Length: 159
Figure (cartoon, rainbow, N blue to C red):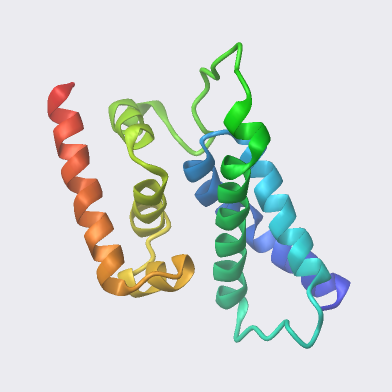
């Protein structure tokens, strides 16, 4: 991949990948690191391994790698053993105040449900596309969507 093509892809997909990863990381800094690492991996990808069908394939690959980077951050020794003095009060930048209650409910969902909900409803991927991005079966995506919706209903009734 040449430099011009790489910069075109960064300009085209950086915001989409970041918003998706931010919904799972729930932390701006970790999301930025995960996205940056994914784009670095794309830049350093050996030409023999860089076999993408089209730009959408590259976007899905970037989302998948970024989500894996986010998971690795959460599993790290540092992250499991740190103590935060200040809890972040800010909402992610892609959220608005009109859906504040829904955003709070989304934050209470487990990360695997948040990822599926975000890709399906916010990024408008089909079940098949979400399955391909997350490396899951279509039936597993459908089950996670149903469970996430059920859990959201319960949480919304509690409020």
